[in-house]
Amino acid sequence: MAFDGRKRAKYQDGMRRRIEVLKHKTEAALDFAVEHVLQDRVDTYFKVEEGLGEIDQTLGLIEAELGLICDLSGAMRLESRLEFMEDRFEELDSEVRERPRRRRRKINFADFFRAAGGGGALPSMRGEINSTSEALEVLGLEFGSSLSAITAAFRRRAKMLHPDVRKGDRSSEPELRRIIEAYQYLKDNLSLTQTEPPRER
Image 1 (spheres, one colour):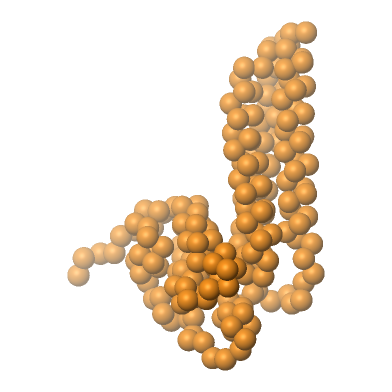
Image 2 (image 1 turned 90 degrees about the horizontal axis):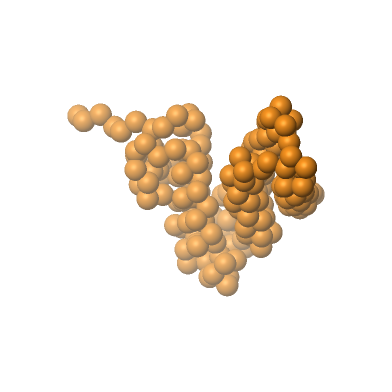
């Protein structure tokens, strides 16, 4: 059964709104996972990161197919795919956020490494990175990198260096601490706009 033009436009608008909402939720869930799950439950983090990535990719495919839909059966099929992605997101988001909260304050990464290393003093994580250019260099990025590119670079590097991924090998912890500090510095000091190169002296 064919759509008339008005019904088709209404259907497409509604689907695009749902896709946009789910994209924003997916990004927020991934940010939450980086902040609250990566350091304590690395296996869960990687599983959630992969699942959210698949959702994001599928949303792009659904969005691309929207313009091709011209009948009711195709519309129902595409809407079913979107509903499946919405359900999948709810599963992953629940897995991330249902971890019992032991504390309300923001996680301190220095405390995490101290606990992971069995106690003892660690070098302070504050003050080692003092500029945007230094933080970008640590993450292997250039001036003009967007916040999403910064987050993606951080996730890639953290995934490679985390002790749980390296079968308990903690030899890369200093580098991981530095990457975390660089990421936190940039998140705290950059707006959502792009960075500016330093002025020549």
